[in-house]
Length: 131
Image 1 (cartoon, rainbow, N blue to C red):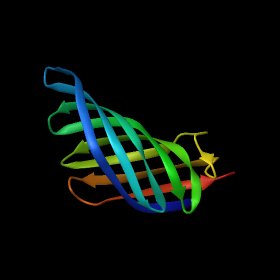
Image 2: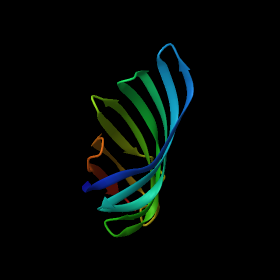
Image 3: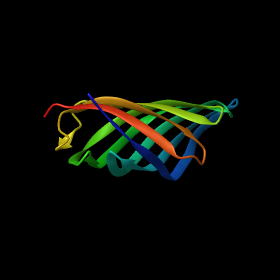
Image 4: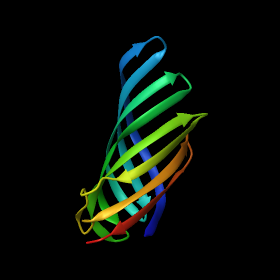
């Protein structure tokens, strides 16, 4: 298994509530994802977000990424789940099985990152290419 490292940007954050009641909020976020480092890619991210309080959020969604991974071209999908609390978003990734295309066909793996507002976000992606 290899480990890819780099930075991730969450650009053009567009979050809209679809339900609010009794202090609970549910929203959908559309975010443009840009990654640099061992992964060079850009693509859309879509998330469902649940706020049980104004200070906490639980979220999940998908990143559709097309670009290069350590010089190999292709695309793949990441399923992301995480929590935002105390000003830090902690995310875990799972590469969607069978989603790898091009030179990234057969990719499997998982990763993570922790993001603080207005700080550089560093990711790690542990992966295997079987193709």
